[in-house]
Picture 1 (cartoon, rainbow, N blue to C red):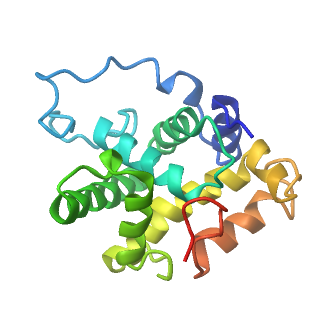
Picture 2 (cartoon, rainbow, N blue to C red):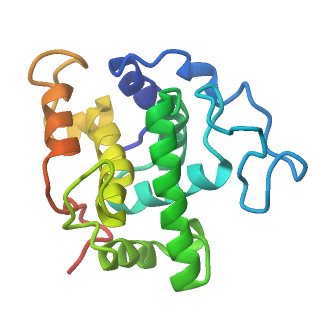
Length: 205
């Protein structure tokens, strides 16, 4: 099962996000002069909705997707990067997602001595569980575990299952935006407490 950039753009279109098709190509890669040592933008505010999230944040979100998506999923990096960059066009979502992903990376560096994206998949899964993300309620401005659940895990799960490819996996075949389709799943995913789904991959025990 291969996720594609088209899948991510379909989800973004359902959310009313436009311009996602060019978001990944209109910006040059960060350079030593334009970023700090962690890949963060050195612009004055760094929060413009037309700016992509920092490289380190995109890498952290991709790394999280690799452990919360079903193990059969391929093309995770392209899918997540496209979705995250497009989603960041919403300033409020961008700031919260950047903050949560940055905090997750900070914990990984403190506890494991490496960036979250550099950890083996099993260690990433274990770290999320040690933080209690698998059982936390998704709360936008709650504790670290709750915010990671809302802005990282549930954000990624919504993107996956709202996509044409991910939707087919669980029988959510309704066209995006139609009753009973992605909106109902989004409410369940983004607002309701729950555990990380059993992906059949990195979530044993």
